[in-house]
Each structure stands twice: as C-alpha cells, then as structure tokens.
Image 1 (tube, rainbow, N blue to C red):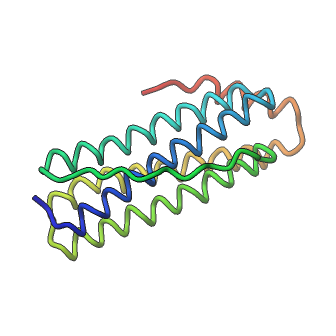
Image 2 (cartoon, rainbow, N blue to C red; image 1 turned 90 degrees about the horizontal axis):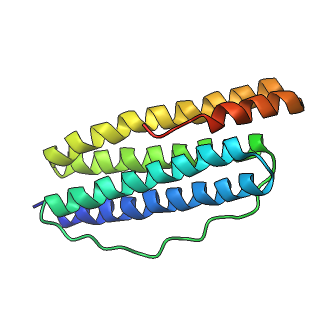
Image 3 (cartoon, rainbow, N blue to C red; image 1 turned 30 degrees about the vertical axis):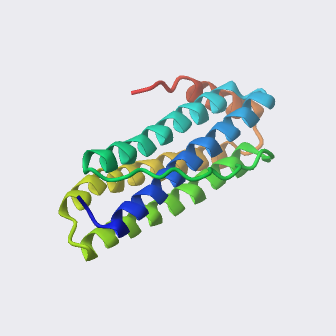
Length: 164
C-alpha cells in the first residue's frame, strides 16, 4: 500500500489523462468538421493513447491495493482555429501534463515510494515523445505556411498514423 498523498495525486492524474483524451477527441471532431481527416485521425489516436495512460494509473492504484476515486472530467473547448493554432495548444497541454508527471515523481521521491518512482519513469519518457511529436508537427505547419497543397500532404501523412 502507498501513502494517501500519493494515491490522491495519482487519482488526480487519472482525471488529467482522461481530460487529455477528451480534449484530443474534441480537437479530432473539429478537424472532421473542417475536412482534415488526417489531422482528425491523429487526434483520435492521441485521444485513445491518453485514455490508455489514464487506465495505466487506474490499474496501478488497484494493483497496489489502493482506491480509485473518479472525479468529473472538465468540458474541453470545442472551438478551434487553424491547424497550427490547434497543434500549439496540443504542445502547451503536453507541457502541462509533463509538469504534472514531474510533480508526481517529486512526491514519490519525498514519500520514498520507490515502486511509484519506477512506474513514473515510463511516463516521463512518454512525455518527452509526446512533446517532440507535437513540436515536429508545429514545425512542419510553419514550413508549409499558407500552402493548401502542403497542408493536404501533411493531412495525408497524419492520416497514415496507426495504433502501435
């Protein structure tokens, strides 16, 4: 069993991960509306990945004989602007999630919760990948500028993303 502080913090992280899933699903819906199915595909897969992250925390708490307490998930925004603006919001959000994970790790260190420290190392590595992925798309969008052909090519590339 781990401390109540760590358990409560992980429960908060479950909520943050599920909000991330909901946010990216909302962004995916936006891209469907503006006829960018590749961007929509990328966002929907990202949404599924964030849901899976929440479930990793869920199973971790249960695996340590803790108690999962689910809170309401905040409503995500539904109105977005350009693909570049959306991807900048993704990167900003991922940086917030990174800070939350790092805060959890600091708490696990303080509480001398070694199993949680080990588990969080996977998430720390994952956040590096998440931020890089969003940054890479932002840089591509910047290089494309106002080119409809460039946007169509990037949309096609993002549409090819699959699970795994």
